[in-house]
Picture 1 (spheres, rainbow, N blue to C red):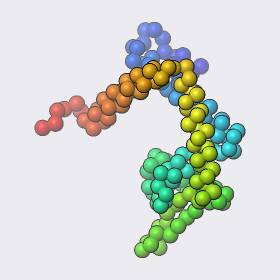
Picture 2 (cartoon, helix red, strand yellow; picture 1 turned 90 degrees about the vertical axis):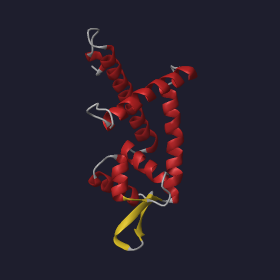
Picture 3 (cartoon, rainbow, N blue to C red; picture 1 turned 180 degrees about the horizontal axis):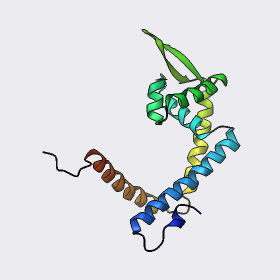
Length: 163
């Protein structure tokens, strides 16, 4: 039974919508994880780390990678170690700081990431095939309003007006 199936008609529509969003997210993520494993013999966390590095060609320090991925440093270190062993990322010393280093994609890692990213993009597009372009645009706009409202609530948790 998925999360959505737990909600019944007596629950508020907003709760049922939230559960549907979670269910859809989980289903799409499950497909992405499966396809990454089947087609590229990799995991979503490895893909995510490579994605962060692709956006920073000069590389990122480990603490920055950890912050961007919202995971512990230990998780990032383990994934990085695997990718270094496979020749997909490299550690580069930081000038002026002997204790620090940056992690960046190798040329091979960049080529592989671009191949995975093209496939990943198509998987996401396919996940929304049931919707028209207009429906996708409308859903995007509506979820943008939810996002903005949630960010405003996070910035002002008491609901008090700014002085």
